[in-house]
Image (cartoon, rainbow, N blue to C red; front, side, top):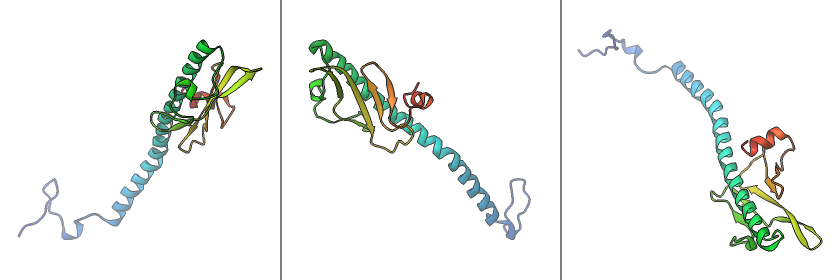
Amino acid sequence: MNKQCDSRGVAIAASQQGVTLMELMIVIAIVGILAAVGYPAYVDYTDRARRADGRALLMDAAARQERYFFDNNQYSSTLTALGYGAATVTSAEGAYTMGAPAAGPTGAVATSFQLTATPTFSDTDCGNLILDSRGTKSISASNDATIIDRCWGR
């Protein structure tokens, strides 16, 4: 007769084979705890990566605005004048969109601008990323400097 043995060579009784319901429940509880801790960290990580995409979009547009200002002595109020192919631009990874820059005119000459990148995902922590001609970085969700620094990756 063939009997099953454990790792020490001790025979296992027929009633001890398999996994008990209690053991299965413990494993499910451990997996649930790990998921409850790990998922928010994963979401935070992916949101930070997406924000980097939005920051890159704004920095590129700001550089184009400065180039345009150098050539025309004023800032542009359209993205097409900055060399973009459309009135609305999507970031490289598709996480943000940007519409026409808000050009702040003094008389008929735009001497400042404000660029806004709108997330295509739900970002309740930061909302829109905003960059202006003075280099001021802000967000639409809060005026708290700590949150702004976190959203801008500082």
